[in-house]
Amino acid sequence: MYRLILIGAGGFIGSVLRYLVSGYVQELSNSVDFPYGTLAVNLIGCLLIGFLTQLAEMYGAFNVETRAFLIIGLLGGFTTFSTFSNDTVNLLRLGESSLAFLNIAAHILAALFLVWAGRTLAYLIWR
Image 1 (spheres, rainbow, N blue to C red):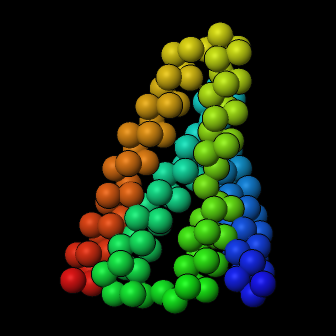
Image 2 (image 1 turned 90 degrees about the horizontal axis):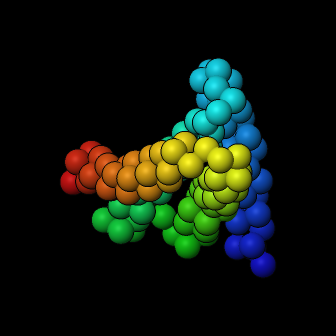
């Protein structure tokens, strides 16, 4: 039960952070056509999950409860791939197929790169 509370608390914090960061980035972009806020949140989340999981694997840096709070809760609430999917479908429904495919490519390619970058960064810092 304690672990579920930790996941829920992390999810709450992650969701609030997602709302704030996504809105801030979207406002900075001055774009109504492309979901830059969602992209930014997903990429930041990928970098962080790569970084934290590398630390956990290399050094056993987190106990089970901390991993539940940070990775499942906080980052699970923070990353927004369901929103990404909805944004992409909406772009397709609006006939904006080129923007939809740009959205897919940017999220997937950058996300994979940033998970790798997070793991590499953690390794280089704490090897």
